[in-house]
Image (cartoon, rainbow over all chains, first blue to last red; front, side):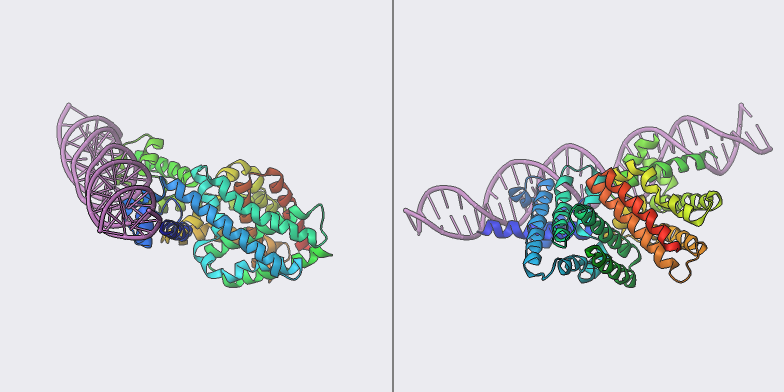
Length: 188
Length: 188
DNA sequence: CCGTGTTTAGGACAAACGTCCTAAACACGG
DNA sequence: CCGTGTTTAGGACGTTTGTCCTAAACACGG
């Protein structure tokens, strides 16, 4: 349907703009200009700005889940799959340097705003956390699997933040190498 | 002078509000209400909102430098001083859980806004980076001191981000313990 | 090609934004 | 207590915000 197409377009552009400019700093006018529709017409698709945010988060959850599922099929070993996760920092290096991590920065912003949709954004983190936990378990780690998952999440967040602050690619590469080594050490 | 007092009050409240609500989301009215002065009178003290931001960053730089200087006098060994840095995550656990790291979240926001004062915020990171580098050098590390400083900065940023997302105190304590151990291992 | 439900453009609306002005209140040396 | 420079309150300004309404354009089964 045309409805789904237009709605999907709005959510897609809103997703991009929320990531690049932040949720609060992105106005209806920004999204409307990006999609190429009139400002006031938003009310037909979304009653409030918060509804757009929820749709964006839902989209991200679906996309992330699909990506993780793909990785679980394609990746040969659990260790290789985890390396695939770490590689996000390399593959998306440009965007992260410019706008930070999409998950981490959205969570930070919603935390400050005291926004109710924070729980939805947190779900994105949980998706990665559970996926990583499963990979560590497949590697033979049992009780500490969740701790290791959180540790790796933590490191990727830290690298993303400092990458955006210092715009230093060699720092990112060096930390990624260390994360590779750390994962290998957990197998023993 | 009364001018310095009022100006300092404005900067102090702006500092708090920028941290708790974000720079963009904090209006002149918010600051005016917090200080208890009239809205329009801001123009006398600061011509633009960006000027307030610069004053806030300057204040943070001065306060941070003073804190680091104090630590360098009080801390017995370099390792103990570094532990003092790590302890920020414990001492300020409540605030970090609510609003994230003041340095990291401000940097993220200014990065997204493409704001010119990002360089000033980045300076705050550099202050910690250089201080940590000096402590590692005093511990006997020579060539890798800066790498270790960045690594520790990275980990504290990651912990702060996930602390705000998951509000999990036991995670923070566990990671802090691991950071202690990591620092000890660097001495050998 | 008609009728009906979907989608659209355009703009109205009050509120809030950053900026800026004016005039009064203040502090204080003379 | 007067005069002068500093600091203040209060509000005007044009813009932009999120929200919401109306009427026209559209799609499409009958």
